[in-house]
Length: 243
Length: 234
Image (cartoon, each protein chain N blue to C red):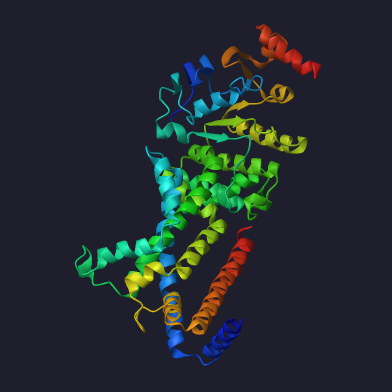
């Protein structure tokens, strides 16, 4: 699926992000490789969303570096190989299809190709029948799938998802998880945050556990869920069971 | 109340008789104000959208200045333009003073800040919502400004209508740079000012009624166009 050289692994080197005096991300060093689906876990305010934004280049780190392969975030090539899906999908006031072709236009895809690829992407997420609908008239779940279609059309090597199902009902959540699995099958590296532990158990191959801006655990999913190494990790999973 | 009754009577007579002088005045008024608004829209929309997304030192000051310019006194605008266009002024060689073109420039100057300031606010609100997504997709500032301008298109009609309201109601600027010359630069508002000062209040009032009717007509047309657009855009 990806002809050109890989932007993976993703290396985070002593990454820190401060707002005022508070260090919201504090000294994170990690390496994420192609393959396993990475899920970032932690309580609200642990820094999950911030970490994704730093990786994607939406925020600049206060200290440390984000390296995609050997490259910094300034590189256009690195940006084009990633796509991001947000908790609240924002769609433009135009048709569902036009929202997808807009992303393709920004990626430099020719006018003729855009429509064809948009149709394919919309079909992939199950929105083919709604292609001509105004995007603003879609339901929350449909909008999130539209955001996924917009990402799908770009054939990213890495897909970053920030709590993609946090505001969706169970049926819409299932639909979104199905699309995430399809990305994975197509060879796209998944890096997502969630506060839904059962979702993490379903989707994660490896887990990054954040606590107060620090990376406390980075382990294969099974290992993290069965034998968390830190007291904070144990408390986090136990908290899930007591709910 | 006699004045008002007479005014309605005069207005009706002027319209029914299709007084050629009145028709010339109405057409010139429309031509000047609509040209000024069209020009101001071309300048104000991109200006407002770019200012919404631009970040530079002193930006807050520029925004305040732009907002303040929405209430710029027409008489002062007219005076400044008069000094620029007068024979001894820096643009005197253009020979525009006391022409409809000068009136269009004057009104365009008054209307542009209104359209730009309202556009700036609309686009900036939308930018807060779309900033991360558009950055993620790789849209630069100029591209993002154009995208968001298109996205708020249904609300921009209000900005343009506010501009038209300003232009069609304004007398201070055009009476100075136009000179209120009969048959050349006499518009509804300058004619009303003239008839009032001459003491022909019922004619002035009649012209006022025609002006109000025109304003209502333009706004109705805009509303109908807006509804059609809304239906197609969803």
